[in-house]
Image (tube, rainbow, N blue to C red; front, side):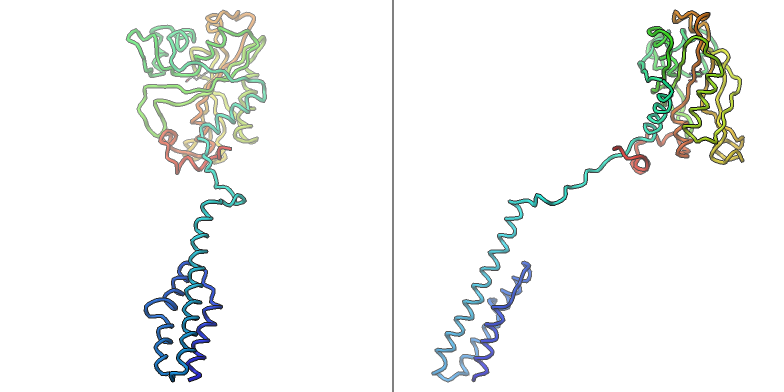
Length: 343
Ligand code: DAH
């Protein structure tokens, strides 16, 4: 008989010390002590085994048990509810903030900025011109009069029937705009987008970017040009890089040259980047043709200067060993996110 009382007291004790925390544990508690198959039901059932004089005492114990279980459950349910709503109302102001996802710079922007930085250290300033150009600035003033065969060097997107307006085919047009409006000494670079009516392949596109350079002063010589290009190449690609000038032709420069750098990919042993020649072309250059100076109302007897033009795509592809020009304009994030983060 005492056994039955002991059992009930043990359960009472159990209820008092139990400490469910999560919603799931609280539910387990409810099922165990207050559910339809609860422990208390069995204990109530045991009442029948007791002699009558003990029934009152046992009944009181049962009521105490039931109340204890109910009270405990109510308290737990309430604090669970409060926990939920208080989280909503009072955010934890000391919690660390969310990461703001930072993008990356386009590889062409990284290289363009680096080129600007390199040239600005030796006194070149950035200037820009329009992408829609007239015939004078894109061709005629650059010593390419109408019907000059060299116009065919660049396949042009003309915008008007009379072919007077076009998308500029090179940034050399900005040279003219600057020389028409400034006085020597002039030391400028012109980065920008250009357009040519070409089939899109891994190595050519109908739109690409150039950096043009121009230096006009008294007594500027080819040696100044060579030194400037050498400085640029070594700052851009490393101290061991060599520069080579090959005689060439451009209507706006005389003499003209094409600029090559020694292939730093293979150390001039021969590789696909340099087509097994050990040298990689980076652009054209030369001494500004006196006819061009005259077109811009500058006296060729007093002033001389050099100009050069380089493709930014080319330099970027060399720098990052990118082998397909089309990647630059496809905006595939898997490609783009490999480059410098935009901080
Ligand atoms: N404008 C030429 C081109 O797009 C590049 C060039 C060559 C620019 C020689 C120059 C230069 O300033 O001197 O093909």
